Image (cartoon, rainbow, N blue to C red; front, side, top):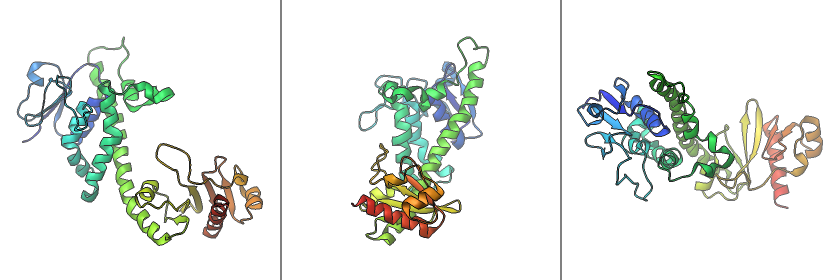
Length: 306
């Protein structure tokens, strides 16, 4: 069936129908995007996908709302918003249309659902209080997208629709970046796994370039690794490995004596010619050559094992 119309509600907007629109307009670029609450539009019909309006969820007839009772729930009992429903039914096709390799589609789909879609679903349904973000509550993606709505006294004819289309471009940028980041992580994982195998029992992991590595290190069970080195813009970087995705704490920090030093001062303290920089927080250092960064890494391992 050819999709000719993508229908969501008119008026003010939230993150869930905006983000749903990102997915659907990518898959059906020739379909007209209609924002309406008129019964003639929000009733299932030929060539039509209706979402976040209509008070029904029926994928067969192409309607994906979540405001009705009983509301649609995930297998674990957590509620869907329209975004979750659209991602469930159209996410795999979106990833393929975006060029994600088939071998990575399922992993990226699941990762994006858990880390991006689910939080939007929970906030939209009131199942997650924005206050859990603390001082950053006003900087979450749902909150930021809602700031793109017109002011209360600037709602002239068509103002909501104009704002929606502008916000759609912003939402699209976030979705595309999040998907690409997850796809890149899949590509990096294979390279990191090879590097871990080559490192053997060594405490230092050498990578051919900067790339996401922590998840692969964890998946490989490489608990013995303490530091990573890789080339970076003509220099070489030495970085720590965080203990997890929800902490800045590292398995081991760089030596305390190096903190905040650069160039000659760092060379003098470390005893390594070519040492150029160490961050004050001791999670990254930079050296001029491979030999220099490897020596710094060896010294950092020795200090961590004392």
